[in-house]
Length: 273
Image 1 (tube, rainbow, N blue to C red):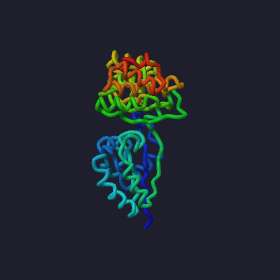
Image 2: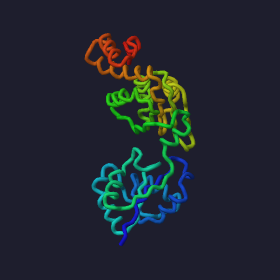
Image 3: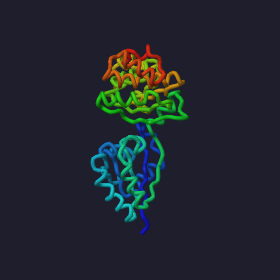
Image 4: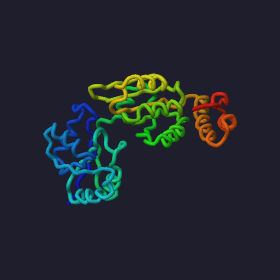
């Protein structure tokens, strides 16, 4: 008996009208649907009158469940994988299952559709020919700041996901790492009723989020323009090196060494936060 197919199905990130006809057809025809949150996916399926059985597959059980799913595929069943919203495996579980299926010789077929990162990038007005998707930043403040410092010299547009609980803190940390004047765009609740897309400098966005409680609600995509010319790249790298040295050396010494290492202006590094 030939093996079935594992379909990777993108689902809406908000507006239910964004589910494609082909995705709906596949969700109705497969033997089962692997879902990160069966309750949330169940609501989507109920809206479209789909009664296909659901199987919970999430970060806590994916390793254990992957082989059982592959066994069903090898037995001839076709299955689908969906995430809570958007394209599976983009900051969501699933890659272990896909890897196991491909290793077993099972066909894995994508059904493209909604993806918050790409949707946000398409309306941002930032350079999109090259970009780096960073997903969710670490929840712990120190780890988040360290990661942002490492990205300060990145020349590609940076794309982050963020939650309502940390959006204000993350914008403040981005401002500190990338500079207050770095252009950025904040996309909130894309395709939903209260969709907003704000642009400006990181200082502008931080100020708007701080004063408007509504801009701290929902799901966010934050896009930051990459370090531009050589001077900006040197300054970003200089700030990163200065922050590291400043933990162990007096500020003036840390700034002097960071300037010598990166070529960044010493005066713009001294006292940087």
